[in-house]
Length: 99
Image (cartoon, rainbow, N blue to C red; front, side, top):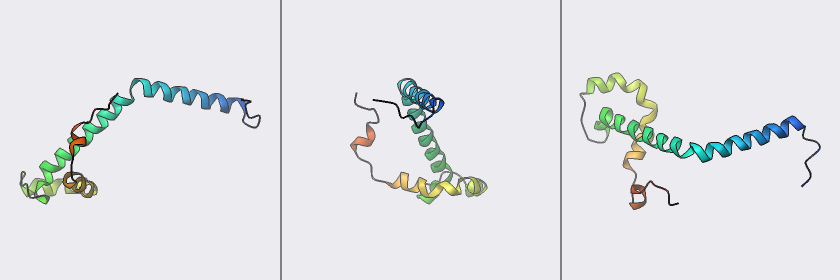
């Protein structure tokens, strides 16, 4: 394949370096970053459950503390309710990839 003469040499080199960097990222730390993001989401859902469990009928904290934290958590409540109330199946229990 002949290289496109309209693309300047530094631009092609930059694209190749980005491709190489993405490849090494995928080979080395991609899975760890994905697992850490999953764990962060689970901890965040647990925190919101503890603080605003009364939305689902699980009163854990007194309302005073919940009201103090409301401005910080309000944008996330709708997504949290969907993630807590969605149906789960057997494939959700197995978070490991088949390799």
